[in-house]
Image (cartoon, rainbow, N blue to C red; front, side, top):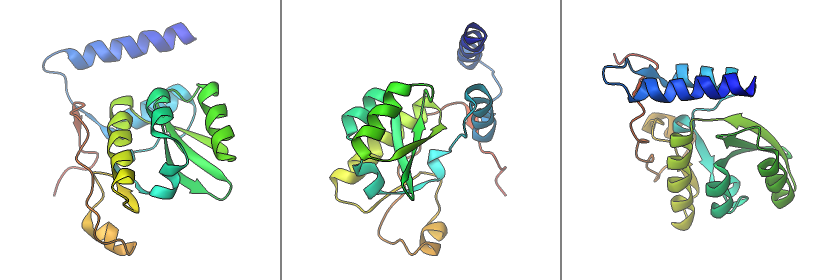
Length: 165
């Protein structure tokens, strides 16, 4: 089973490197990751994350483990991970935070980009990290002002999930 998953992952990498490959939507990538890993996926470009959640996991651990705390839900912490089967990372975050980890999967390039920009927001003493796909109207609906969305993640050969109007 693990060999099959690794083969699919390698074929996916090869396909993405080929010229003329039809771009995928973020929604399609997230569905595939969710199916492969058996945990919910999360589009970090659409998240508004309180810095209080980010502060719970040191940047070094987030980078080393490719794991990003994107929400606090009661006594739980929601963790976006490139490898949600990494039980050592989960145990480390649970120990550090004193909270139960709820695993989510996210594309690793997007995850690493978000980690970089979210911890930069923390260093700038901002209250929120805002994903690149969050609109100004969505921020206003939440009563959030004075915060700009992060830059978009690196090109992943993705097309928008919803065609522009």
